[in-house]
Length: 284
Image (cartoon, rainbow, N blue to C red; front, top):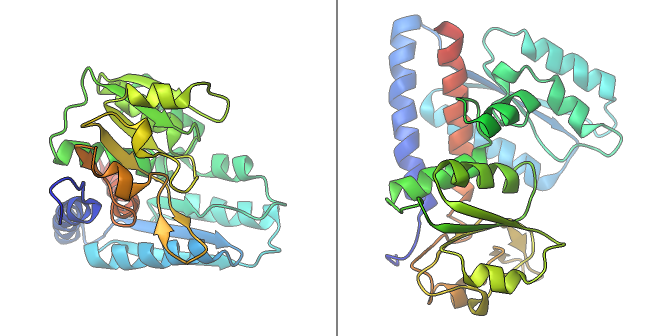
């Protein structure tokens, strides 16, 4: 494997090993383990794969998991009742609402109904606000995973020019805040940004999270930049690619994440991390 690669699988396995050790100790001490409940509404294929991978990950580190699969026509009230039940279920420390939800359900209302202490996705306004203020909180899993990868490879963030492509509440905004907290100078680009190519050329660190296959090309990246590709796009050929043209940019970047095998494995890992943290908070 190229020494330029930021290998999310390697970092993920290391952190999951640490989580398993902690869970084993808790089980011996308290005879209980952290619990994670996943709620899936509808038959979205990628969502089902993610939930299945989550279940396997929980099993591997000793975390108890539940899956609640509901039909596409589930009403908003029915979903809220399930979340209320999980909010009050003692053996559940984390609640994952798998997105996207069916169009007839108000996504914001559902996410806000999760107890902030069990919001292991880090989407609740309380946890988003804590992140904004730099307080300990449950951090959105993908951005948290990005920071963990940069730390693992001892890549310096302080003082660097970082550009985040994308402003979603799930990735772009929290990634920008986390980089800012690491003392980077951060620019957020989006669909209305002018001169994106010029901005990218000045970036020491690029986080691409816009959902456009191979959008970032070699001409947009300065030599020795660190490139983090969050995108997962499937081409007509069936091949998975990121938001970065990996074959082109690999030659000029100092370090780069592959797709798949880069950021992806870290998302579930940090979900496990947050679930363990929630359990520890509940018994402290």
